[in-house]
Image (cartoon, helix red, strand yellow):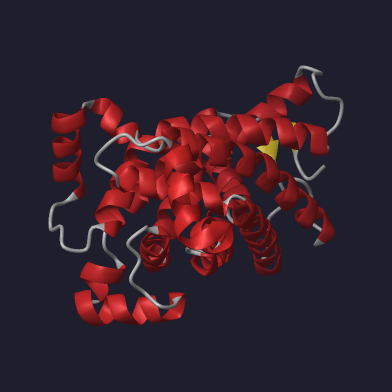
Length: 296
């Protein structure tokens, strides 16, 4: 194992640039593959969040399939942007987490959960700021009212019509808040639960069965914590003519629909996030070993 318990917690040998690059590559490819499988659920989640009324996911799915068929109606929308996002943002936030975690544990000492939450929040927040344009285009390509002909063309069109900062970095605050809560809760839950289950003998080795179990748990926890911010991110990024900020939108949603309004699309999101994490992290772990790295 690359991690051994010591007096101040889990210590790890220093990583060089090639190691970090391999970690990013393993996470990026693994996430892109997993996100592809569950892209239809992401499409349904986005469309449910955009609807002011409560609509059953089954009704949204039937509507999309009746209009465009399954492939074009649910599988294809935003798929290219999903690949871009997996290879860039998600690969960054997960791939650089072990390095950031180990540095946080070195600075703060011990084997605390707080340092792990902080590490996930940092990689998620930085990744969200840098790769925000991909999220903007992805959300809009998945919308039922998508008016862009292609993913690459959407970047140029958004920048031309709305400006780089106001368009491509639209909703960056909500996106960063969502990324920090998601990444911090997901990665800390996965990391801590792995170690706890191994320490208590529930699993005898760091292997795929353990990865699947911890992945599912981390996905459900992360989506439950993140859903309100996720809804705000979708609303801010998708409503082109809406000049309101995330806090104003949150206030209006709560005033009209109560706190439950911020959980629109939760079941689609949870149905996606639990399984996608269950599939995502084991793939990432396997790719890490394939690239000569130790487990997460």
